[in-house]
Length: 205
Image (cartoon, rainbow, N blue to C red; front, side, top):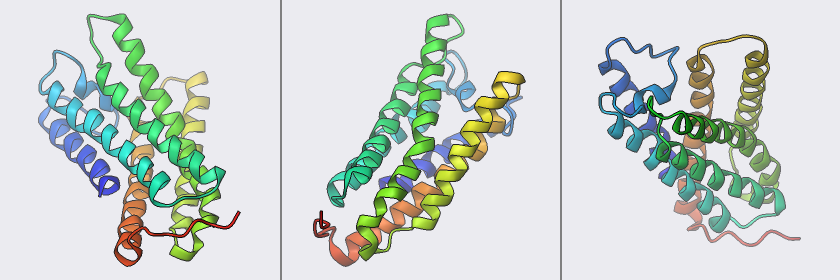
């Protein structure tokens, strides 16, 4: 459930706060503008977009690790999901503050590191999912999401070196692809739990 609730909570917070903020462009402006200290409902947005989804993402990673024992690639991918959740939480802890240069640097660093880790984790889990073919993981979605997030992140880094562009142009498709990954993963885990109670045998070494 954590994998499904986390992105839904983020999108709900974003759309509700973005539509109510005068002058905010839903397509072009970065998510973080809605969590900047001193702005309207910044604390509520920070809680619902960064802090709570960060905790839920950690739960997802731990569930993948403990619920479905696997090989090295699977464990690495699970830990990367945990790391992405911790970094998302840290992004919310270090809110943007127009009065503090350091706060802005910390927020930006945490956010970019979150994107970097999250862009690789689906591919690593895809590589490790061969241990769980008996429970039919959504491998095509994981592969597609992994390739898409990696490509979007790489393109954003490359473009940033040669041109300036609104952060929202990169953040929206990246977050949308990860939403597909999270929902598909959550639905799969619920199906595994329903039919097997997550009592999956340890794969052969």
